[in-house]
Length: 424
Image (spheres, rainbow, N blue to C red):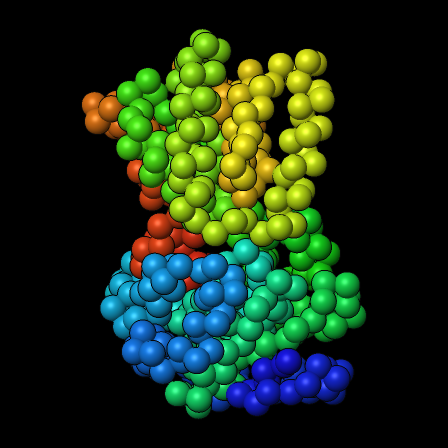
C-alpha cells in the first residue's frame, strides 16, 4: 500500500503518484510551515489511545505473531508522548537561533532562523517494527516533508501509525508520503531521490552504498548505519551481570545495532576466557528457556555456520559450546565481529591496555558497550571505551534500552534535518 497525502492507494498507482510528487511537495513547501506543536499533539494523542487499548484488536495479534513483549511496546510508545518529544526538541535543537542576533560591527546585526532541509527521503531498516514511523516523526519535528521507503520486512506498523497521525492532525497529511517500493526498483527510488533535499538511510554498508548512488552531489546524505555492540567484562563480573546480559540477548535476539554480539574479557589468559565462556553458556541456556524460540530461519543459518566452525576448529583454535538453542564460541583472537545472532555469541580476550588498538580499526561501526565490572573500575573503563569510539556505555542488561532524548549513534538527528539561515 501507498500513503499519499493522507489517502491510501494501491501499489499499482505508483507511477501516477510519482509523476505528481514533485509538484505536490513544492506546493506544501510554499504553504504554511509545519510547527512542532502540531506534530507533538498528534503523536501524544495517538500514543495515549494505543496505551488505552483503542488499537488492541490490531496490535495484540501483531505482538503475539512476532513475539514482541509488552515492555517493548511500552518503551516505543514512550517515545511518542508530549513529554518525550518536547524534551527531544529542547535537547537536540537547544536555544532558538532567533533569541540572539549575531553582531556585525559597522552593519546591522545578522538575524538567524532555523529552517527544515525541505524534503527528506527515509530509506528505513526493518529490524525494529515502528522505527520507520519514528524516523518520519523526527523529520516532521524539524518541519520537513517526508518520503518513506518501507523496508521489505515491514509488518504494517509504520503505515498504520503514520496514517493515524494524519487523521488526528490533517495538516500533517501534506508532509507524509509512504511508498512500499522494493530496493530493486531503481527507477522509482531515483524518482524519489530527485525530489529529496536529504536522504536518511538506515542500514549497513550495502544500504549506504546504494543510497550514495541515488544521491545527487547536491543532496545531503544522513546515514544511521548498522553498528556493532559488545559487552566488556573484567574478573569482577557477577552472575547477576551475566544473567542480565543473557536476558538482553534473548529479548533482542541480537538483531539490533545495540544488541550484544559477544563478550570481551579483560585478560590475555585463555584459561580465564574458557572459564567465562562455560559460565556464560550455562546462564544463557537457562535464560533462553524462558523466551520464545528465535526465528526458524535465523536458527537454521546459525546451525549451518556453527557446524562449519566445529569442522574448522582444529585450525581456528575456536571452541564451540552449543545446546538448548544457544551457543557460545570461545575464540583466541580479539577481533570485533558480528555473531550468528539469535542467541549465539562469542567470548574473546582483550586486555584493557590493548583495547584502543583493537577497536580503532572499527571506526564508524561502534555503538554500545555493556560494561560488567566492579564499581571502582567503571569510570576508568567508561573513559577508555569512549576514547575507542563507543557512543553508548551501559549496564549489562541495558544495552538496548529505549529512552527519550538519547542520541542516534552519537548524533542528534533534528540538527541534521535542519539548516540555519542567516539574514542581514
